[in-house]
Amino acid sequence: MKTRFTLLAIAFAMLLGSCAKAPEKTYLFNGRDLNNWVFALENNSVLTTDVYKINKDGNILIEGKPFGYMRTEQKYGDYKLHVEWRWVGEGSNSGIFQRVQDPDNVWPEAIEYQLCSGKAGDYVMLGGAKISEVECVGDFPVKERSADAENPVGEWNTAEIICQGKTITSYVNGKLLNKCTGEHTDGYIALQSEGGPIEFRNIYITEVE
Image 1 (cartoon, one colour):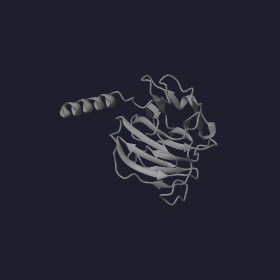
Image 2: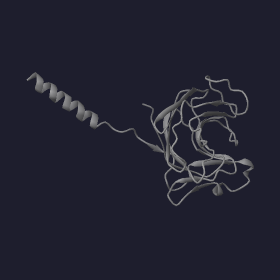
Image 3: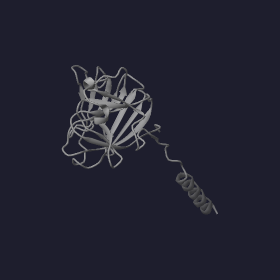
């Protein structure tokens, strides 16, 4: 009898686990338009629509020139961000900005999750941003990633970035590569134009568990 009760308890626990709700996703890109994004470009030298587009596959295509970024309309506090990216043609340079502060500049105050080909997962401090783990001097201080985890140029990669309080923890293709402690607990999220064409898709946030 005791054995039967134990088996029933285990089966019930497994049932509860299988019925647990998946984290609710808040999509930052709806796959149709860029209406919920704000754009910045160096010297406003071209139309933003020439740089930030949706391609035939329904992905965001950022041309990479001139320099700038597209950011969310609202600021976010704690979240887990999921972004998929791949290079179009040759590997180049771009980034995913966290804790972006006002005002909008080509190099805003933010912590960049580096996407530069061969360096994905580095942190770059922009616009005077500081973290406690490295001495932030010069224009673009860097906290290097702990390893390499990028896929070959042309293949899709996955970025997962957890912002909780002042702490930012980052993964490339499921591998933990970097962590830092910044100064801000909220900010905009942005995708950078810097170098060459890059695609983005499946951009969403979930609650930090």
